[in-house]
Image (cartoon, rainbow, N blue to C red; front, side, top):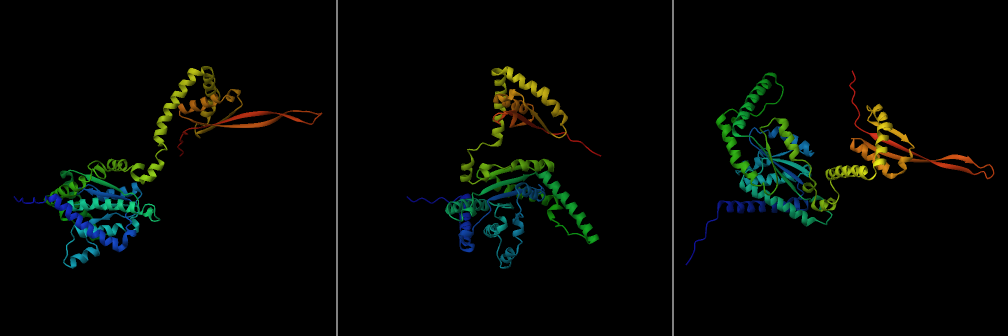
Amino acid sequence: MSTKPSEPLPADLEIKDAQLIFNRVWKELEVNPGIENLRFPKEVILLGGAPGSGKGTNTNFIREVRGIASHPIVISNLLSSPDAEKIKAAGGMVGDEEVLRLMLHEMLKPEFRESVVLDGFPRTDVQVECLKLLYDNMVRLRNEFSGTPLAQHFRQPVFHIMVLFVDEAESVARQMKRGQETLAHNAEVKTSGVGKLWEERATDFDPELARGRYRTFKEQTYDALVSLKKLFHYHFINAQLPIKAVQENIVRELEYQSSLELDPQTYDTLRHIPLADEVITQARQELVNRLDAYQMEHPELFKKVVDFVYEKMMPTIKRYAVTGRARISTEDAMFRNPVALAMLIDVHSERGFKAMVDIRRQEIPSRFDLETGEIHTRVKTVYRITIFFKGSKIRRG
């Protein structure tokens, strides 16, 4: 009894198509520019946004937050590049394979070696699969060149998926507003002869076309980006908020994370050193425990130190409140006890000051022996205490 083989599902076909497309392009790159020159950016921020979500406004902000000096790679610009025009002139279509080829060649340029913002990719399921294959091959290259002189050029890749989202009504409203602003700007340029004309998009003047553009984004680009959520670092930004709130969210989403951005081997080397936040949190609790212990185990000495701070030091601190620094010198024998010095520092820390103690010891002549000519000295110990705090601001004029 023969059975008819089941037909492949559409998703399976797309995966196979993507593998074929990617493998063809990748083999070309292995020949030219060569495997050792496949030096892609360490960090790739894939930026997607609904029409009117503020991608143009926020792209430069994202670059500033991440310290990215290179310009963004905008796929729509690549599709009108000389290389793309050659394909069209030869009767070809700029499909997924051509988009991938153009994009990868662009990403290999030296200016994108560290980081890049990629605007407009992926937009189809095939492009999603190609992106996964790119990441896998970048990891493979890193492993292949590990331990060689070229290892520094093949680092652990970091992919961010960032989506700026607005709903359909907001998107259409913003597209219409942009259309009116474009008309006003272009009219001014034509009248004055100064400035450059802005592109007049048909979708910015027709609400139905604007809605169609939004739905295309929602059904294709948005779904493509969301499908990568489980694989890469995903950032969903509500772009309907005021611009300040949107950018605060972007900053929060892209805050530095050592475990995310460092090479795994580098991270393993550093991870035993505690983070500053952890040290600070622990230090607060330890300070509380020490102060309570002083009160329980050395109540008399603790009271003397507190009285010294209040009576001898605070008047000077108040006098120099504007400068944010005060220095007090003392020879009080109480501080020969190291515990007293520890108390002094901790009391100031608990009150919001920073105290530093410099111990100076000097030999002072006390007696001269006329018979032997020997000079007898005593040791003078001076405790120079410097207190730092936030000074007062004075407005002048």
